[in-house]
Amino acid sequence: MNKILRVHRVNDYARYIGAPELHPLVSVIHYDELEHCRHSLNNYDVFGMFIGDETLEELTYGLTKYDLHRHALMCVAPGQIGGKADTGEEIHTKGWALLFDPDLFHGTDLEQRMPTFTYFSYNTNEALLMSDEQRQTIVTLLEAIRKETKNANDEHTRHILVHLIALVLESVARFYAKQLSTPTKDHADLLTRFENLLVHYYRNGLQQEHGLPTVRYCAQELFLSPNYFGDLIRQLTGDTATSIIRRFLMQRAKEQLISGATITETADRLGFDYPQHFTRLFKKHFGITPTEFLKKNS
Image (cartoon, rainbow, N blue to C red):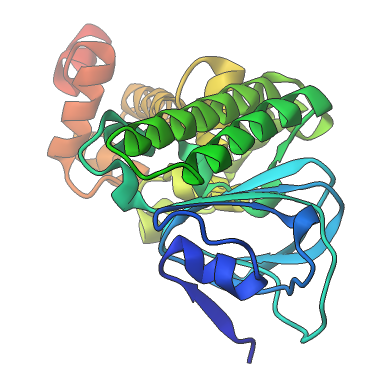
C-alpha cells in the first residue's frame, strides 16, 4: 500500500521535499532550485496550486491516474489526495508550487470568495493548460509572494499575502474561463452527448431507481468532474447545467400531460418523490400550475 503524506500544514510538504520553510501559512516552492526531491502521495489539509514545467506521468487524483503535461496548472483543496507515490529515488523536477492554509484568510473577503473558485474541485485531467504568457503571469505573482514571506512578519504581511494570493486565484479563474470557452474537439459534441444522456436516462427507466437526474450523475457519465462540467456548460451556453436539466424535465412533463397522464402519474414517471414538488417546479418554470396547464389545453 502506498504511503500517504499528511500535509496538515504547508511546511509539512516543504520539509518533506527539502524546500525552505519561510512562513507558517504560505509556502512557495520552485522545484528547479531543489537539490534533493522525492515524489509523494499527499493528503491535503491546505490549498495547493502546482505548475508543471515538464511532463509528469501517472499523477494520482483520488483513485485515478493521469499524465500532466508541460505548463499545466492543477489545484487541490483540503480533503483531497494527489501526487505520485514515493519510489524511494530522488527526482529532478521543474515547476512551481503554492500552498496556503485556510487560516491565512479567515475573516477576510477572500474566505467568502473561495467557493467561487470551483477549479479546486476539478480532476487532474481538467488541469489548466497555460500559454507561456499565462504561466509568466502566475510565476511573477509567485515570486512576489515568496519575496513577501521572506520579509519581517509585520502587521502588513498577512494583508499583502492575501492580496497577492487573491490575484493568483483571479488570474487562474480568467485563464480557465478562456480555456473553457475555446472550442475543442472534446467540447464540440458535449451538449449533444448531454442531451442524449438525459434521453437515455428516461428511456432506460433510471428515474425509477435513482430519481431525478443530477448534474453530478451527468458529469460522471460524461467523465468530467461536476464543477468542471458545470463551468463548461455555463461557458458554452450561458446557462447552468441544472437549468438545462430542468428544461428537459419540463418539456417531458408537458408531453406527458398533453398525452393524457395525470399530474400524479407525470410526477412519478419523471422521478419526483412527491407530486407537490413537481407542481412547484412546473409553476416556477412555466408560470402556471399543471392543473392550469391542463385546463388551457383541454
